[in-house]
Image 1 (cartoon, helix red, strand yellow):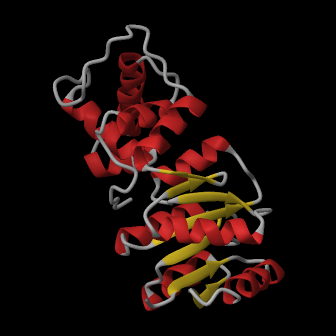
Image 2 (cartoon, rainbow, N blue to C red; image 1 turned 180 degrees about the vertical axis):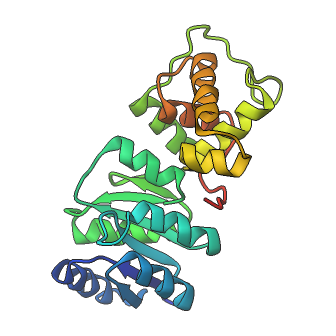
Image 3 (cartoon, rainbow, N blue to C red; image 1 turned 30 degrees about the vertical axis):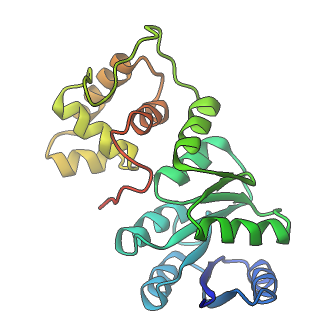
Amino acid sequence: MDPIKILIVEDHPLFRQGLVDVLEMDPGLNVVAQAADGDSAVQRALEHQPDIILMDVNLPDANGLKITRQILSTLPNTKVIILTGYDDTDQAFHALRLGATAYCSKDIPPEELLQTIYAVHAGSYVVHGRQMTYDAVIEWAERRLGHYDPSGNVESAESFTPLSPREMEVLEMVARGASNKEVALELNISQQTVKNHMTAILRKLHVDDRTQAAVYALRHGWVRLDSSSSF
């Protein structure tokens, strides 16, 4: 079996070299390229088409989550592991819904990082060291971020949805990471109209914010974490 090809995206030279040193000790892994900013990350990814990308969140020219989305729109089979010094549940969910398959703190022990790489390559999601299936990720997000349904009897998405077709379009795009401006441009409507739709969506789904609405959409199968996005 060929070694797993890895691209490291990290702007701090010392930490980046530390990652290289750890990964090159494992004969099953091959660091094919490195990048220190978003532009070079995209270029290296397209050039080398790695199996796994280790992606820093805070890059000097872009947010790592935005670069993740950009790369995966072209290389959907590549897996992205987010490495961050700011370990936050809400950020973890946003990373996953934008296409990442793992979210790890930068203080992760080397052996755990290696385990995460192999787990992700095998098809698992990994958050805070816990390996999960797609359904388990949705349950985790719902439990940690919250979803509230006072009726206690929500029918399945296949048979019923309380949203209008336009509201479903807006929610699907939001769940895939689009901003109000991006939704407005894509649907050729004003940003105020997008805001009005979001207000209606939150009210109908009995949730408090966009993240909870996205969890609801994922939970009911309206969109998937690995859905491609053009935003």
